[in-house]
Length: 227
Image 1: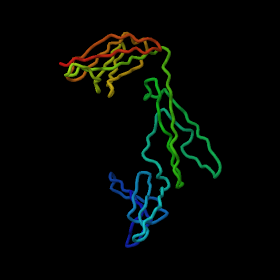
Image 2: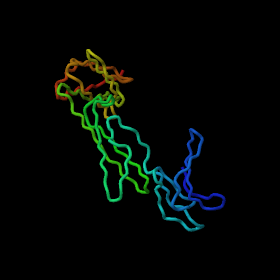
Image 3: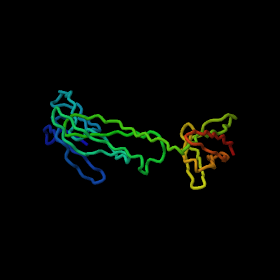
Image 4: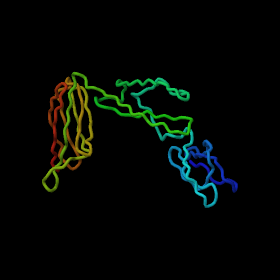
């Protein structure tokens, strides 16, 4: 995107955005001040520049309607309205609905998002944080643990990217350990007993049988030996 500059030997306040996929330019809102040699950033903010030779500008502008970066819909969050008009000195209410039954929510815990706004004014509107807390069902329990690997020096260290497969009589789950070697999963206790397999390239896989309990966290750690 570009805003302001020199066109036919004259300073202009016009702005344009280029879509590389379509190979097309589209017009942006005109800047309040025409300058050249300015800078821009996601927003779209127009910073500095000069409005005459050797006369730098200290102005910073936010082009209307371009005050937000990329956003994406959150499946568990919806709003009562997508557009509204707020009169000077007045307020308006937007009702939020949180839905933990969407397919993307498969585990208890806290899910975070931000409500983003755009406006046709030159002023930015801060994002509002939203948190969905999903409590575990009364018949669910949690299995967690850390996968360690034996080092060449004879000690142990967490293994990031290890595969933890949890098999039940009904189905199976495949987890990947984080940078701390940790894994975790909530399950209905009716899945007992669990067959848990920890594996990583270069190490011998290890298998264990685990029984989870209602509203309780059961810890099962693994130490993998090198092949």
